[in-house]
Amino acid sequence: MATSRTVLVTGGNRGIGYAIAERMLADGHRVAVTARSGEGPAGSLTVRAEMTDAASIDAAFTEIEQQLGPVEVVVANAGITRDTLLLRMSEEDFSEVIDTNLTGTFRVVKRAAKGLLKGRFGRVILISSVVALYGSPGQINYSSSKAALVGFARSLTRELGGRGITANVIAPGFIDTDMTAVLPEQQQQQYLSSIPAGRFGDVAEIAGAVSFLAGDDAAYISGAVIPVDGGLGMGH
Ligand SMILES: NC(=O)c1ccc[n+]([C@@H]2O[C@H](COP(=O)([O-])OP(=O)(O)OC[C@H]3O[C@@H](n4cnc5c(N)ncnc54)[C@H](OP(=O)(O)O)[C@@H]3O)[C@@H](O)[C@H]2O)c1
Image (cartoon, rainbow, N blue to C red):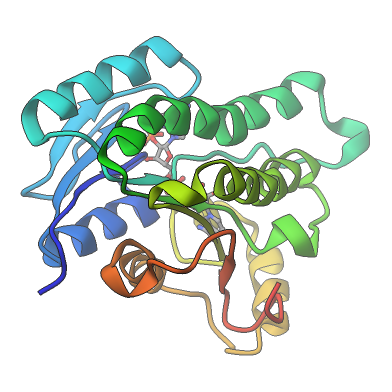
């Protein structure tokens, strides 16, 4: 039986985050999710938090610490897209995505860090995207925010790697969720034809990679980018 940990999944009320929370519960961990609306899966603790607001993240951590103990595994999953081509992209489209996906991750990991250091154990798992390193037209804001997570995890590894803390990135390809459902049919078909596996991924396949990185077997893996993309990014 793997060691039971206190896990936080941001954006755990739907999509990939919900599936990660379900898997972490099945693995025997104590699981909290942040949500702006709705709830995490049965058996998890749902706390309210807005990724663009450090005070709400602080309050969420305090509530989790009181109810489940210090957070040991942080899964920074909450994220948004605001897709449009560069010439049409407003500064607001750009900064809103950076503020949620990148600065939001910074706010969460910074709040978690003291507890991880105190416990001399931590697993920081950042949910990036295949488009971080592959590029994607219409996603300059989003791919920039996701590429930055690689530098984030690697710098964190160099800062805290000696204290029992690992930091890794998961780069999902196209996964069946609300985020991909809004893409035009023609674009979905185009993506599909470029994926060697010939299909979109399932949320459970991302959760499986998180389960591995959070588990005892991954103690010596840090600063890695793990693609879960049906071969689309060819290992990047
Ligand atoms: N689906 C894919 O193909 C795919 C591929 C690569 C990477 N990813 C990444 O995987 C992660 C999850 O994606 P998904 O497909 O599951 O997305 P989703 O179904 O759109 O869910 C996004 C989650 O993030 C939360 N969130 C967004 N903005 C937030 C904010 N400002 N404060 C707090 N929570 C916020 C949402 O909360 P609300 O319900 O309150 O809005 C929701 O729980 C994202 O980081 C995404 O970029 C997805």
